[in-house]
Image (cartoon, rainbow, N blue to C red; front, side, top):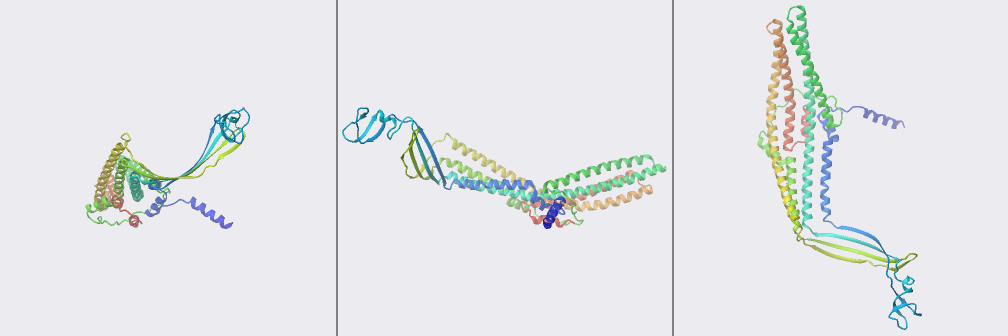
Length: 477
């Protein structure tokens, strides 16, 4: 009992504790388990793949069984009977002759007193049958099976696109938080710096050694800085919710990007090589190619509407009938099982132009799939080249951004010293603070964007893998 209570307590404690994404790998693992977008893609893929066994089933034996019960009411006014003798003149019979025999009579014989039918009786029958049907030749169904395979392959590539897209979505949300955290830090530092300058200008004004203009200017800059801090805080909160939307877990403290980053150019350092990989491996392109193949099979299936089909059928059936009148039931016979085996050749002759219309429709759909493939191919080429160039530009921006921050800090220190010496004004100091803050923001964005664009370059070629997330995670500290 104590062990069960301890287990329950630990479970409740685990539920109550918030989950933290310590690093990029933690965030990805949570997203892989909880992301509804990926789960929807998985379910769609599994649903589409069920088209293959459904198309194959139409080429396999179809077995069915049936049991039918029927009842017919009413009967005739005559009856056939075998009589041992005939006496009297109360019967009107055809073929009266001496001795025994079979007579067809009207009168008392027709009231159901002997075996026969009457207006008050019911004829019931029971039919029991089993049938097996096998397609021998149906080119349309064969083509539909091939189309189903191609459609399933296209769906699998679409799912792989969603899998690879998750890498990028998690990384984008993660580094978006880091960028916004830096922006908030800089905004607060900017606000503190403006506050310091405002306090200094206000003190100088009250001491009578400076004009009130400087105090007003410093206060205006300080108030604007406070508004920027609030905006940065709201932006960061939304960025955290963006990651929570993917992972389904609250976001805790995340590891930061380390100061020194590898500034290596993409390998291979050739944009055409990246483009060739993208055309060859991009799952979005492969999906469209399979869709074109499926459309080609659909054309074949439509054209098969002109071809004959051959089916083999085997059945076994038994029918039993009996007579039941208002008060009693008399079994008139038991049926016996009968077997039927046959082959059916069906030759389409004219269907009102429906087959030709389906062929034209399938051709149009094939053309649309080819156009979609070409559009996707061009988009992948453009995207790949854009990310390749972006990585090179990010490397230069990181280098220049670092120099800009260092220069901005030196400029601010010098401007503050000049203000004390009387060679600089309060406006110069405020401008120097703004310049430094802008440089810090630009540098932070360039650093995070460099890591993201390297992942996006891999994603555009369809070659991004888990190890790429691991490599990016190593850059955190």
